[in-house]
Image 1 (tube, one colour):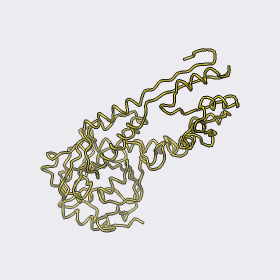
Image 2 (image 1 turned 120 degrees about the vertical axis):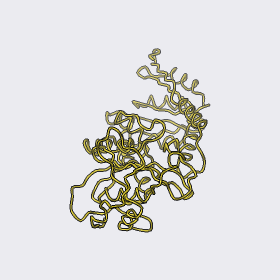
Image 3 (image 1 turned 180 degrees about the vertical axis):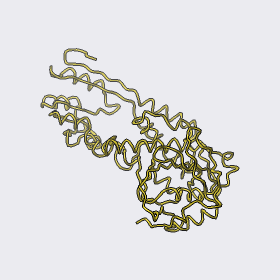
Image 4 (image 1 turned 30 degrees about the vertical axis):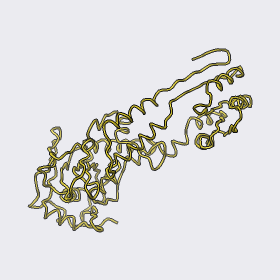
Length: 379
């Protein structure tokens, strides 16, 4: 449980530093919280020490109403791993309370400029330490407050902070593929806030406000708003058809395809090796299924299968053929990008590789759909 701490240990101190490293937003009238000096920061961190170098937010002795804060950090990579180099804390109204640059004590091996927006010149004159920033957050955020962020665990680890009441928008909104996957903050902002962020380098104040606004939508509209987890996966197109009374069969040679596509709302029909795929499809059409979805692998003669099915298509059926380029190259490059853009990675994601990845993804974004009824073309 969070510990209680005397307010005096977390109050402003005479050696507080007014230089927070980053100029306040001109649109913000609220003053920034002063950073504690080096000695004061050491006292605050020691008072909130939890384990090893970890500090834990403390509960003030006097009871106050719980508040909401949003945190976002920009990282650089040192010889010891990712380390915070800029931290921004905004209050529940989106006003910046802390916005500080800090210089890690260890040698910086990568400024991660394309994401952090920081470089050697940005931090050249900075003398603030990560502990000063950490102490400033400990002074402001009470253990009973709610701390909001996107992939908040990364920010807390970078600051060596522990907090017990967190709202992580990466988990609250989930991903269509389920746990283990996260939607990017810029994707959620575009989808639910109609806002473009992270155009170029990240702005930690902008990101913190986006996470805060996404959290407020969850509070306003309930936990199911924007759900992309298991519940959303259950309601795929086949499940929606099943709810309306449609009977669906999935035909494929590949067992993996059947396992992914043939859920409780659809029946799996495996086309045996060497069997005529067209005949298998037609047999299911004649069996009375409302929808027969078939997977025809590249090189398996899509034209011949489609022609055969159409020639014998029952009069009340519609044949739809949808084609798409292979996803193997786009998947390979996307995985490489995910690995290379991890602050812990040793490889570098270059502009040339980014262009190659975008080209592969663009190529997969287009396909061809052909629809034809038994009596003639309809689309």
